[in-house]
Image (cartoon, rainbow, N blue to C red; front, side, top):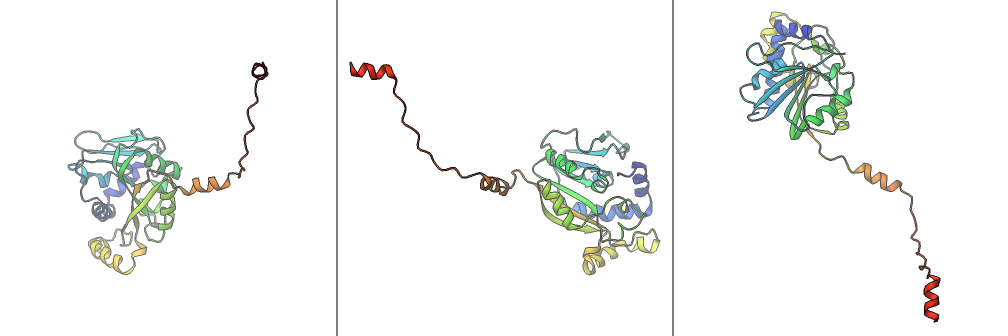
Length: 253
């Protein structure tokens, strides 16, 4: 179940949330260094990470599930958020170039339908980027952050989910190696924790980032298996066509 949007907002307003935003934001930006001329849409609670794309992308929007609630964003300018059904997005087919999912899958009630809906709106050649809590990391085990709520994931689980929804994983990244505590000592050394963790214990990050592309055609293996299940039928010689009686009579005459 999705967290309340007010709890998410409050977390990113605290020192620990601001540090998490900076560290995860660096990893997101490394995956998408240039989105010029593209449409970028966030699903879940992605607004802390969408601001970096506003001056670069052609269109930026944040869609929030009805179970979570919605807040006004950004504070200045045009309202760019909307309340949606996670399995029925108000977007046209193949209309989004970059789709960012943050605080979304771990609280989704229908994982595969939600990802299939993401597949529908993503343009051919577009990219989806999922930020998910790592089930091996410390952030998924505590209650001090939203990453400790809902279902965490392993790499294998994310691969299975993406492939079942007709996505192909292409890039992996990670973030949040520091302990999920708001102590000043840890907050000040957050960058050092990131560098050390990526070197010494890369599998124990707080979050996993996976970028995937949209499969346009379904795998052919299912069709091949279906053909093999068809019964074999031996060819039958067609009988000679019967001659009409009135034609036989005309020939005899």
